[in-house]
Length: 120
Image: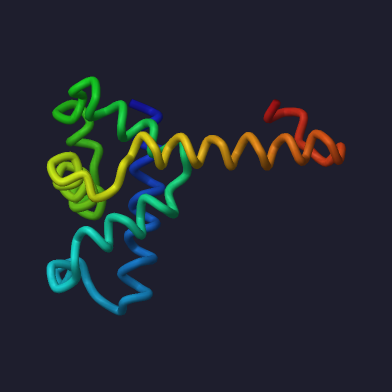
């Protein structure tokens, strides 16, 4: 459950940031296209958080993780469910591309010798 808490905290912060940029409250979220909002959040979410949330759905852990969700995260998870139905965002492909970016950026750090040995 710890990895879900970390992912939920990240999603909560991203959602708050989105609300702040749009100058809206949580009650006004339905005035905006959920598909676009979902796309914005998943594109800014770290790959490990996306993998954790994807695993939660794949392994049917939603009911266990539900009690850990804030209202913002619950809205995001509902968007995720809608996305599973309509596939507006290909989550596995997004995860793969984010992992590829991470590998490429870490490979560049290895070549230049500028890297954090603790992360390797």
